[in-house]
Image 1 (cartoon, helix red, strand yellow):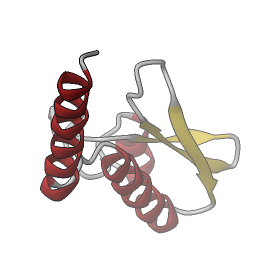
Image 2: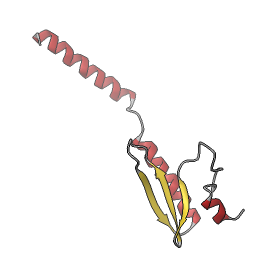
Image 3: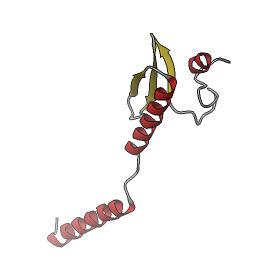
Length: 98
């Protein structure tokens, strides 16, 4: 199978039916369009256009990493701090008779 056929079928790295495959590369005019679904609750798709397959693969990897970074959970210290502040405010409210 040729490289262009693999791109059209979404098989540049993994088979198109592989659930781990993230993002897609498709021919668009004389270039390649990279698309990665951001999954922010509304249909948001990050896109870039590149001239060759190597650049497109790098862009897809970068876009997937950017989406993953935006989905990262709060660090444990941040969560513990937030809970601590909330408990302190509740304690202050109880003491004030609110």
